[in-house]
Amino acid sequence: MMMTSRAKTACRRIGGRAWSGRRHLSAEGVAAMLAKAKAASAEFAKMDQEDVDRIFVNIAHAANKQRLPLAVAAHEETGMGLMEDKVLKNGVACELILDRFRDVKTCGIIERDDNHGIEKVANPMGVVCCITPTTNPTSTAIAKSLFCAKTRNAAVFLPHPKAANCTKEAVKICHDAGVAAGAPEGFLQCLGSEDISRDSSKFV
Image (cartoon, rainbow, N blue to C red; front, side, top):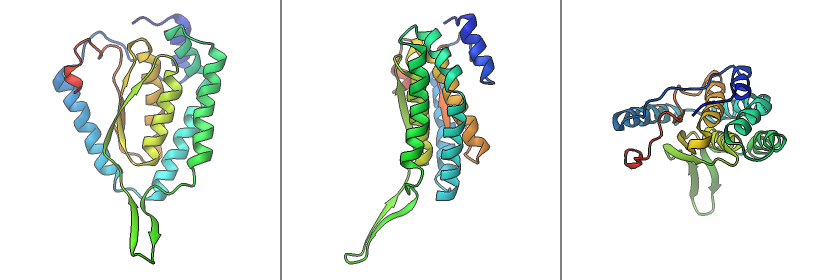
């Protein structure tokens, strides 16, 4: 999938690059990606609420700073919707999720009923598979990255083929911001347009 000059410029603005190439990821490659995600998940599960909240906030701020160039990249790649609306969606994904869940406890004991001797404990699920659309690819990637970070889950994204590059850029921004705040390397990963083939059996 070729990107236009404007989309390439947007990718340069956000400090990334269009993750290009023309090779389909093999079943072994997918297995390696999942193994990396599982290793990151195991490390993530050891972190406490303070660590998680720091990572969560840093991702939200980093993604929000790049809401405009990500919107440009998504609009150029998909040809769908209005770029201005995509800027708004990216910002809403960052700001509303941050405001709503910033102080929500998601690690360890989150609820206790002393009368009945019951404790509710929040534990991560592990590796989450995140499928993202072509209609609002970057805002969806941001939102799912934030939810996974807040709950200490690793994630592997499978984007729509027509929005693979901008989705991967959004995931990369979230991943790098998370790692900078202490998240394990590889806790967010995304297949690119070069990885996606019509043979879906390797992803099952």
